[in-house]
Every structure is written in structure tokens, then in C-alpha cells.
Image 1 (cartoon, rainbow, N blue to C red):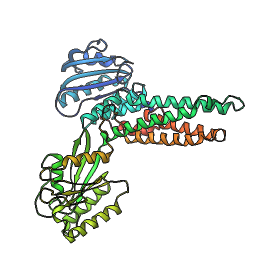
Image 2 (image 1 turned 90 degrees about the horizontal axis):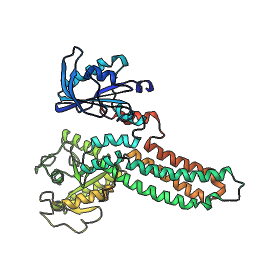
Image 3 (image 1 turned 45 degrees about the vertical axis):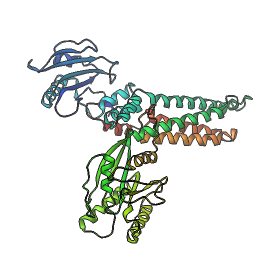
Length: 461
């Protein structure tokens, strides 16, 4: 793999399909032979030049802009050539083929997914958190997610992690000094207020973790499954949340027989809302398959909206069926998955006592009454705090690394109280905390982790 990373690469850097402009990108130790062959002349560094792109026989493939970014002042840290042509697929394929032909002598090849950004990381143009932010910015599904990814790409998240790491390095230095010079009368740890430094590090890490959790929520969103008996109004609720007629609504029980999903935005947070078949015993073969799929979705949910029908709340059979579903939910769901009891059809019959609470509310999916309250309740369940400014995009692996670092700092705090009896263990906990932070920026990590991350990028990135 390292040998391949030394090879020149080229790719179409714009999305597949037709467009006004398309870009072919080349990265190599020296792209001047390709510039001479394709452009027919030298290019001024970082200056857009309008010219014809030449085929091997001298005819023009197209006309467009050529820009040369000499190393190391380029995206990858190598020599980079960008050719901006008309965005037709055939034109771009011809231009890419011409670059590969012109670069045959230097073994120019087609880039693998994410290879341009991987080279930027390996050449210290980006750290790993910034490199991941490139993909997150491209994939952002909301404005808030895009802004947060942009902050991470600019290095805000990495700066926070580096600040934490520098504090850890200083504290480790004090501990190692105490270990190396035990005969000294001076107590390095007490004089340097090691306990105070550790406490401040824990507070700082807690703040970073909180912002990272918000960023992970912006990136991933949460999966919300609407469950309940047939005709409780699940499809109507999905339509009301989405603001569109996505699911078929009829008075016939069992209308919904398959999963219907829609991603909605609430304050910039993506919520993946899923309508499922009504949960009941019996039904025909198709409906039973739909019910099995409903349970599959429920078991993979981050939150459940358990919809009840107020108009049938006095029917013993209906109440017993709701109780049976509640028991099944309790049996099948992990304890941390919240279940929100929602009482529908308040426009037909007034809500009964007990339908309002931390995880209970009443609404009308038909008129929209109470829908905004449900939206806010789902945000609260997700852990969202209405302060998106300053949030940086993060991934679940970042959150887990910060949590591990926090766990090691907590262990270090307990060991610090034991002083000399546990200095070796204290030093080890601090080292493990630093390693956890290093995983975020990529200053330490396994090659297979890098491979997984960059393989998910698009080809020209």
C-alpha cells in the first residue's frame, strides 16, 4: 500500500452526471510532464489559465481552465493539476484518459476512493479529524451540520483535542519526574498542583465531549420509530411531522404493511422517522410480514413513539392490547431506549388525566395540535441543546475516544490520591488517556482504521 501511495494519481473530482463544469484532478511528485502534454505550455502557479486541452494528435478535447498548485502548497501536499472542463461525462472521461496516457511514463493511475484526502493527511496538510470533516461537509444533510463540519475542517475540533493533549503531556511530565527522582525532597506533584491540573483537564474534556456529542447528533441524527395498534394514526403522524403526504391514510385497519421512512430536520438535527405496520395478533400473511419488519425497526431504534388512540381508551380489549405491546417493548428494547407515549385524536375527544408528562403527551395528527411539542420532546430525548454555534461535527468514534479518555482521567484522579503507592499506575492511566485523544487526530492509530475512513470518500476526493 505504501508503494501505491508514492504513485501519481488522477481522477474526476466532480459528481457523476452532466453539469456545467467538471474537474479532473492529478496529484504527483511532478505534474509538469502532464501539463506540457495536455495544456501545451507551462502554467503560472495558482493562476487559472484558459486554454484548449489537447489530445495526443494535437486536436482539442475541450477548452477550459487549468490550474497548477506546486508542492507543498496544494491540497495533497504534492504537485496538483486541476483541469476544469465542460461537465459532460464523455468529455471528462476523455480528459482523464488523456491525462493517464500522458502520465504513463510516470505510472499515473486512477485514484482510489479518498486517496487525495488520504495523501493530504499523510503529508500533514490535514489531521485525521479534519480529513473526516471533508467527507462530513460533503455529506451534510442540514445547514447546521454543514456549518459544524466546516468548523471541524478549519481545525477547531483538532485545536481543542491538541489543547487537552498538551495539558496531559505536561501532567505526565510531572509524574514521570517524580518516578525518575524519588529521592528528591521536592514533591513535584504537590508543588505543581497536579490535582488542580487534573481537575481542570477533566472539566475541559467534559466541555469538549458535550460539543462533540452535539456534533455527532448533527451528523448522524436519531432513528425514531412510530409504533402502535392499527388505526392509531401512525401514518397521519408521520405525514404531520414531515409536512407532506408520504404514507397512505385510510380508516381500514392494516393499511400500512411495510416500512415508510422520512428524514426530517428539527433545529438542524436530522430525525429519521419511520412509520410501521400496526402491531396486533392475526392478520393475513402480508400483514404479518409487515409486523415482523415493524419489530425489526423497533429493535434498532434510538427512540420509540408509542401512539395510542384516545377514542378507544375506554375499550377494554384495546387497552389490553396496548398493555401487551408495552410489555413487548419493555422485553425487546434495551433499557436506555426511551418510549414516548403519545395520545392521538385529541381533536375528537379531550385528553384524559395522565397523558401529559416527561415521556407522555397528547396531540392531534389530523389538525397538527401538539406536533411542535412532540418535535421538541424528541430533540430533548436525543440530547440536543439549542446552542449550535460553536458545535463541531464529530463521529461516534470521536465521542467514544473522548469517553475513554475521561474514564482514564477519572481513574488517574483516584490514583493520585494514593501518591507514591500508585505513581506507576497513575502514569499509565495518563498515557492511555493521551493515546485515546491521539486516535481522534490520527497521530496514533492503526492502518486499517485509516483504510476504513478514506475508503468511504468519493473517488476524486
